[in-house]
Image (cartoon, rainbow, N blue to C red):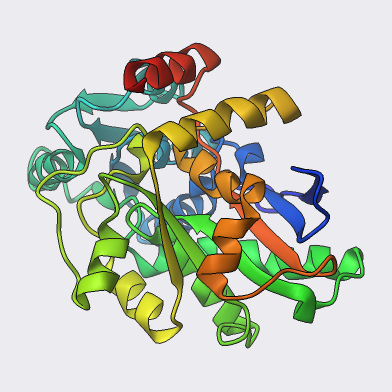
Length: 333
């Protein structure tokens, strides 16, 4: 276990009367920041801070985020005693902004979406820092090889947990993960590559309509960028995916599914009722497939047997409340 992220359990859960397939959930909402972002962002900050300190300088972190990445940066910086500034757009919930502040980070609200917040942050990095004493660490929420390296540890743990539970790898018919900018997806692919499984275990990428940029890119055969991304799954609202994510989705023929906001919200409320865990819609997008295995069968082109295993990465998130989920659902009715 690292000081900035937790080894999380992989547990089988029962979602419906049907026994096919077996569904295993990777509990990433048990990370210090409440989401998988602690892995990659914690890894990046820790690694770069060590190098900066070896040069006898003081590391200072600057993060742009829709919410969870900024919280992961703030939590890591609190653990490592590093100054942290997080720039978030106006769409980020106030509850999330307060969580980031409570970790000791300086929060700046700028821009109507993440890309505008990021532009402001990049401009901020060019000024007001004594470079003789300090050195900045820029934290992108998803597009950085060091972040992917941290996220890839999810696969290491999945393989270890399956071994402990005596589940053969050949029974795993797919790994499901939500996609915003693609950091988690790329980490999963990198982890599968490390273990020689990228060509044998398919990844199902799930998005919500309005921020389904990977799906749109795969349909058109070229990486596209949305002018604006809009969904209740604000953690997925990136206007583009990382180039490496698009390339790997094509290379490994990853399956792409797009869900409606309403069905994702309904899944979040159902999951909270079934398992007493509140998840963000971004996480609910993946969990939706546990309740609807026929969608997975169609995507993967197979018929599940009772011995088949599907792994769903419950990516987590720290902004949702039951009241907020119900209000969002009512507004769509």
